[in-house]
Length: 448
Image (cartoon, rainbow, N blue to C red):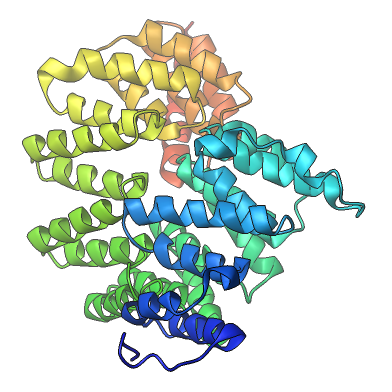
């Protein structure tokens, strides 16, 4: 490893190459003295970009400095659209003032319009308008694995796991050599009920065969081993993934989440929660980490800890609908918080009807309080809302049928339960329940 005393007297392009090689070998401690040897007039965009990559793997302050370097990269090289996209997605004050159409108007290629659309989508993501960004991205077609990957990641951030899994799986089918975001796909395969074990094993094998030195490959194998019940093996893979750090500094949040999940499976609760807390401190905007932490506390009836965790979550993600749903879940854990929780869930469902977790929690609350009339009104609106995922329609109609039956409307209940059966609901258990309920309604309607 290089140190301040051992940096060789290399000048010009050779010194820059030395610095880049140092980065690639994850010798972070050696980077600063190497950079100090580079004269200011040779601080070319490549060096600025390398510094941005280095700082992005550090704390929040380092991430902000990284964005500043990327802004300099684009200022000095107006074709560095990848750097610009990252700046736009950061949501900084500079990013919001960028005119994406003006940026590409000098380009004469046929892809200029698509590039402007892509950059505008990044800008929308930076300002928290993920739903609008998805609409714009969808205009770019469905045959580009990079676009499908980004759409999948946005869907996942919104809590739309079914759609995220679909887009990421399409991206993988189009480019099996791509590793980026495939750790997220492996988690989605593992999270499905039941887990998609065959798809997960196939993904993990392809990633490992493609490049065994990537974090994504080890994470995928970790999830695969966990699904198969091989927890010690899964823990080894998780540990390996955590050690394959980004530029030798910060473990990927996806790797740390895998390790926390395995530790929980091994009943090492305290160690798992310490691990999650460390992950959150490194990635304060990651809603998936908060969700695992808070839900785990609630499952173990640690309400005080859950309240403290959700307070931090709301502080760091004040505009996130998923954060508000987590707050509602914590409130539902105590009798005094149920009314406020219901109010929060109603607001979230009204504004973000695609967030099914909020929908099911709200419907469950109506059911437990016997507020079937209000539940019926909400369910009817949801079945007519185009923003609600189609794959949820079977369950929605089935629940609507149950509520209508409980309010003495068997004919209407029969109608919606029949619709539920034709929607080919994804969840087999719900469909079986709907069939049973359907026959009960059929008998009841004959009486009337």
